Image (cartoon, rainbow, N blue to C red; front, side, top):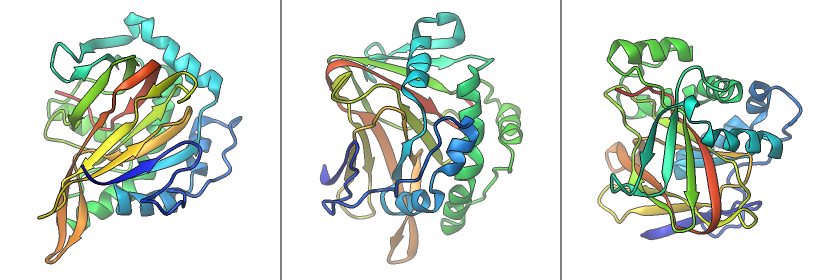
Length: 265
């Protein structure tokens, strides 16, 4: 892996500069989750997505909220399926896809993030000369997914124990794809677990791949590229394929909440 960028908690260093990847905004953790998402510095997020393909937000969930969400993992009736990563050779560990109806906080976060990510999604499509099929409303977009045969919900709760990891992959569940997604840390690195960094690898045009490693703090969200992103090239803009994964958890337990904005076949 060439040119690795390491980001961490609480400092988020970019390529050895020591500068934060996203400017810290004042997030009112007593406010409604949709309001908290709106308080994120979205101009900074867009800039970081353009530069690095990912952007780490300030804390948007309390410790109690994180515990509530991670505690849902053993309530099997809330999920439509469970995936054993070792069985499918995806890595080691387990994750579960939520079924309808979603837990209130999960549904509200998904609704709140979508319109904030739309401007970046549309700008990227324009640079690559692609259609931008995403309407302003998430519900309308999901109806389009359902009409195309992508009817299964995709919000996901992941659990990694000591020795678990996730192979590099992309969360593509059909022809309709939203180009950005979100993962939220539910445990505290260095306290609840060690290792388990979030990995992003970008295949650059006619160059070696670039890797990014992020230690995802509790309650913080990482916005990242789902499939590919525009990068400048000699001919203007090119699509750089991107995959993501998780490094080996060395100790403890790591839970994350994943928000994907297209449904699955």
